[in-house]
Amino acid sequence: MHFTKVLPVISLSEFIRRASTVKDFSASQNVHYRVTRFYQDGLYFLRLSSNNPEQARQLDLRELYKALQQLTDFKTENFRPFVPRMHSPGRALLVHLGLIVQNNQEETYLFNSTMPNKDM
Image (cartoon, rainbow, N blue to C red; front, side, top):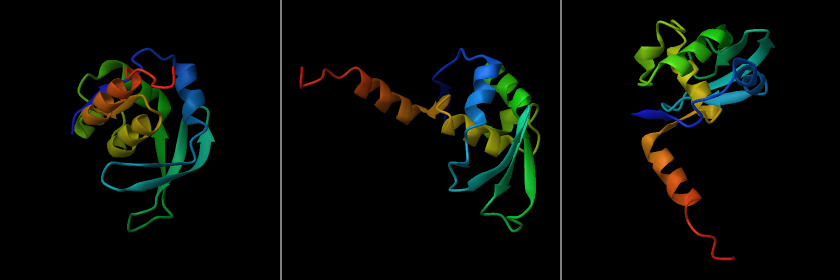
């Protein structure tokens, strides 16, 4: 899968504000996450489809923001230097927030957003 930035310019404070409103999100492999708690620079979440769904995991939003700003290739393994062991949920959160999209989704979005409105 290939992902592309949709909003390449977003401030850290806006990123954290948006992330702090998330309650649930999913990864492309049909893995579901539930946010249990937000704190100043991150969030705790549960991976609902794991062998231990009650184990809280932590995601550092400042580091995920650095990944968003620095990466051009959004393969999950490229997130490892920024959010080790949280690379898949990190990318899933960026997708959920609409900050990156799969190329086929982006092409659909661009196509639909440029279509003339027939009601005009």
